[in-house]
Amino acid sequence: MEIEEELTSLLPTLDREKIICIVEHLTDVIGVQQKSDLLFVEAEDLKPFLTPIQIRKLLLAFKGDGNRPENLNDTITLEPCPAASAETSSHPPHPSSSTSTTMYNHYSSSWVSHLQIPWERFPLRLSHAITRGDRAHPEDRRSMVRIVVEAMQVHCTNPKRASCEEVAKIIVNRYPQTFADFTDKGERLGCGHYSLLRSIKSRVEHVNRDNTTHRLRQTKRTRNEEDCSPNSSATSPKKVRCLVDSYGCINWQPVDLPEGETPASLEEKKHILLTVFNSEGPGAVERPDVDDFMCLTYISQRQLINSCPSLSVAEIQEQWPFLFTQKGLSNHFYKLTGIDISERLGQALITKGRRIINYFSSQKLKWNLGIRTLIQQIESEGVLTNNKVGTAAILLMMKYYKEDEDSLFVLADETSTRMSLEAESNLPITPRLIMLGQSLMTTTCWMVSAEGRVIVELDKENTFADAMSVFFGSFYVLNLEYQESACATLELIQRFFVRINPEEGTKCTSKVGTSRRTGTIVKRKMIHGPCFLDIYTRRTTMKTSSLAILQDAVSVQ
Image 1 (cartoon, rainbow, N blue to C red):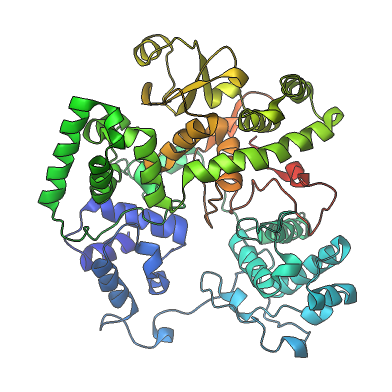
Image 2: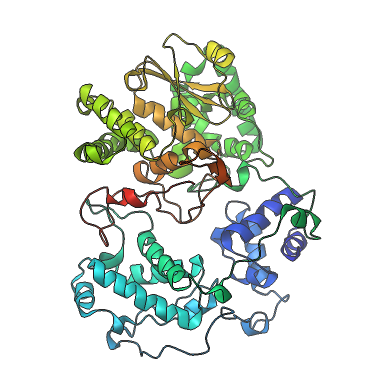
């Protein structure tokens, strides 16, 4: 592959596994399709994989340094969409938008940079709403989408989703008060443009529903054809956790050692931590010196966790046992994402959890038998007056998404121990929150398991919010993917409660799933974009309920 060869020639000391990881990231996530596309790669795209010096070397080589002509036109010509028309828009730009973003500087879809959004054709009522900064009326919004898609089709008859997203970004960034996604509390939902993107893409699919000549998808190939393809390789590396672990992180792999520290000094601190743990147990995590040493050795912890191929959870725990405590994991999550998981999730489970319960309770007759039964149980136990709000809200959402409770939780006897659970409960490989009690709603003690063993035991004074913080944080700290059977609920926790909204992708990359209707194994419906689980208002099109977007929430076939 020419991209792999290019990287190997520019960084010959880099091991092949890391180069393969970088190539897959550039092609699958960034959108690099050929060698000339490397010209548009930026430093942010390579941060998770390389040191600053390595990144600068690559960027310098990509942009010239004698290997490429200085003139961009000598190296790459931005071609329009194959089905593009040679015509230009017949509508001149509106005078008031002469300084608008009509030329969008994004090279992944060249025609988008030449797209002129016909602001002057928008309905008069919508133009007034834009001027006043009001929300768009649903009818005007639909008219606007039709006009925009018509303008897009002048350049490309069947725009891809990435191109539709670029256009949605332009519109929302210019007039966020009118078109962006907000909650009823005024909080911006994720990227803010997901609902508009969905409307634009739906309109594109609608107008092309009978036009097979403009479909961009490749002919489906059978497995035998793929196996016989000269481009297929029997030795292609298996994708591991390290390919998706930077998702939503701000400090995934630091490169600079702490001031005054060397690799030898960090290794010495690691041995001290192991000695303290072996002599005093997990309770020693409260010692100030242990806290300081765990902070200083963060870079070493990330290097081990991010190693490629990745280590098992047991191997990581053997070398960093203090990481598998509530405090150790929460502190690591804070350095990794910049979020105090215990505080944020604890508050959100109470405030947003109440709103979820109130919503479902207010429309009790609308729901299926499972949800109605759970609502009756919640009301009979007086959940809204105690600390069971978070548990009730999560269980309600699992019922709504048709996800089984045991895909997240394991109910066990309150007298169970770590050893008895590992020996008798047949714990799943994917993470679970073990609930010790008579029922999920009455549990007062928790553990967290992964890879078939208990990895964290919480103290009896901890709450459900503490347990959920450790459980959810383990996916990020240990680079674990969401299990397909609970991916919708986990994405809800991530985006709605914890408010981590990456621009692209998901932490569940499974290509198959269980149908919610038939129970059979089917191909998963992959939902792209950052907000497909925003369950609060989409005020641009709906105003009747604070949870109306539930009707459009993610579903896995």
